Length: 75
Image (cartoon, rainbow, N blue to C red; front, side):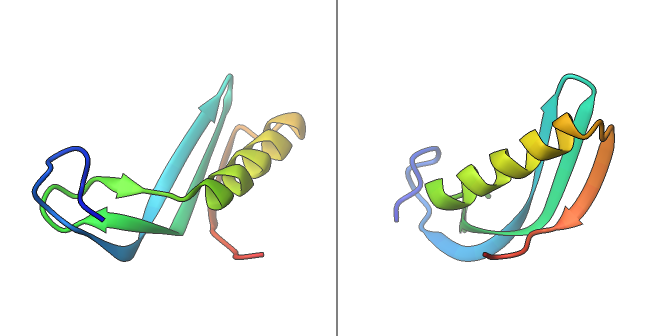
């Protein structure tokens, strides 16, 4: 896929860290599958994975977590 940000690079499969914040809760997910632009480094996480990340962040916020760092686990 052509990068929509730099419009020059192609994306390649890789992994990224995603930080989500909501109120007093911060959750960092490491090794999240994504497509990464080989030129500018822009990261693209697909919709299914994004939904899972948001659900995990919601659970963490509800349970009162202030900071959590975890490794992404595929379903």
